[in-house]
Image 1 (cartoon, rainbow, N blue to C red):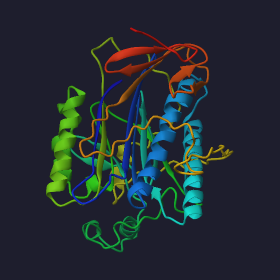
Image 2 (spheres, one colour):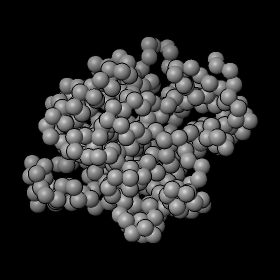
Image 3 (tube, rainbow, N blue to C red):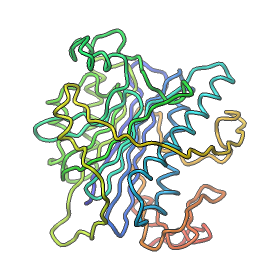
Image 4 (tube, helix red, strand yellow):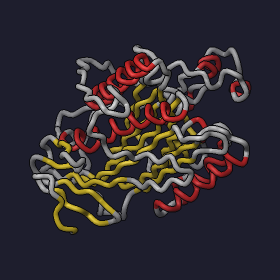
Amino acid sequence: MNFYQSLYTDIGIHRKSNQDSIGLFKASTDCGEVVFGIVCDGMGGYANGELASRILIEAFETWFKCDYPSCIYEENYSYRDLFKQWGKIIYDCNERLVKYGMKHEISLGSTLTAVLLVNDEYFMAHVGDSRALVITPEKVYQMTRDQSVVAEAVRRGEITPEQAKTDRRRNMLLECIGVTPDIHPLFYKGKYCEKDTFLLCSDGFWHNLTEAELIRYLDGRQFHEDKEIRMHLNYLIELDKKRGEKDNLSAVAIVPYKESAGSETNAFEKNVQNTSRDGADLDDTGDTDPVNAVIDDVLHIRIDPDPEYDDIYPAEQNVNMTDSQENDSTEPVNLYVPQGASAPVSKTDNGNLKTFAGRFYIMVDEKEVRETADGKAGLDI
């Protein structure tokens, strides 16, 4: 399976800073393309919310670039291993943010919605009220469960979905990374269909858009290149702003498609159960049931002090895929992970990626730049 993808974020008409952070990364492997998207909606005011969401984006970016290449070819690597890795990232980031907030007597946190698409399967992690939607020509399926006060009230039958749209409690979250020591992330897995659009978005994006508008502008069957998706995301965000949305607005869209017959690579198999969009139709809230994945053996990472953010941020900062400008120019990062690159991957001192064995390719302005085993960039290919 191959993918069209794009992303867009906007500061909105009211906020002085963009506390949303988004990321989109794609790898070309001998098993086919793999794509990973993530949306985080920060909260805590100005730099605090932006810091919280950025910490999460960069932690997952490091996982995708440095840890996942050594896992993708492992024969026994399962969704439980994947969710265990994601759980460790979430719990570690939560601990860092909570300690930082307590030390400086501030409140900061972030939602999280992430999806990994491999062959014909999806894997999701979710905390808060950002959403993962699947858009088909007939219906929009909400794949994640809003962890908010009003969503819980709807599930209990205390209020209707229409009442929830104007309820004064609609911005009150039950779960948020960085606020309390206890956190309960949700994990999902299932199958997807060709040309169904995966949309990850912050609540500022989905508040004022109808199901018909999402189908009209984001149905995957109309797209033939990445820039078409970006144009439509831009249009919907401007439509949101015209309708008075005051929050930051962010969205990541991914559309799987197959190349011409005979061009696909052989898929590697994984034994997973299907909790696809079919299950969402049975739930009044449009939610699928999360996978009950137990996150155990959570290890704590060492945090080096940083002059600006004290004990919360490592001294060697990762590449930030966020953009707080009104017109976001961020593009997906494309990686190539070959069959032989099963050894651990690490960062060099200057932030470049390297492998201890095999090759690692980074797409820069549509040119493949080879990273050699010693971390030095090779010739353009």
